[in-house]
Amino acid sequence: MSIAESNGDGGGCRYSAPPTGPTGQLEVFVGIGAKTYYDTETRIGHTFKDVRNVGDEAHEEDSAIFARKGETWIAIRITTISDSATFVPKLRTLIAGAVDQL
Image (cartoon, helix red, strand yellow):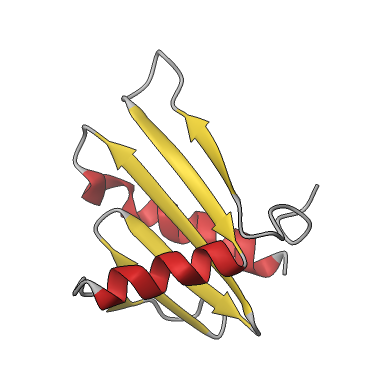
């Protein structure tokens, strides 16, 4: 199943880290759920850094990244007890791959 086919209703997917790795959880939202998540984070005052060369627009904060291609939004969030900044390069790679599937 491609990212474009999943979660068209705004729902999300959640993946837990394997027991042998760092403690964490990754969530992926596509469609209205991703857009609502981004709008909420903006409304409550979170600041974002623009991400270049991903979709039509992309923005990141410490533990989440958001991208839009056309009218479709994608959000990927990581929750971890580790330093979330260490995962930013991987989040960028994931969101770029997801946007490429749209």
